[in-house]
Every structure is written in structure tokens, then in C-alpha cells.
Amino acid sequence: MLQQVGKWLLVFGLVLAGVGGVFYLLGRAGLGRLPGDVSFGGKSWRVYFPVATCILVSVLLTLLLWVLSWLRR
Image 1 (cartoon, one colour):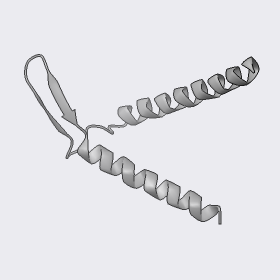
Image 2: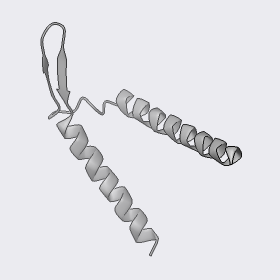
Image 3: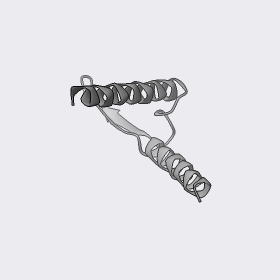
């Protein structure tokens, strides 16, 4: 029982580290600062709405899942 939980925690940790690495690389590439991303605030606060980034990520994930679905047929 404990070995099974340990395996799942290890897999979850590796997946989480991989996703973190992808987000880090995408941030370095400029994703998150696209035209259409709204940011405003004062001296000590900031509100950020990544509208264009969300649309771009949604389109890319939709295409990726569509291709994967097409390949599984």
C-alpha cells in the first residue's frame, strides 16, 4: 500500500516539475507579455489579466489534443 502511494507521489512530483519547467521556459520566451494582456495598478499593487496569453494557450492545447485524437484513430 505505501509503495503504491510512494510511486504515485513520485510520478506526481516529476510531472509537476516538468510543468514548472515548461512554464519557466515559456515565461523566458515572452509568453505572458503579449499585446492584449491587461495590466494595471498603483504604487504598491498590480492586477494582471493575461487575456491574449490565455487565448493563445487555449488554441495551442486545442490543436494538440485534436492531433492526438486524430492519431489515436
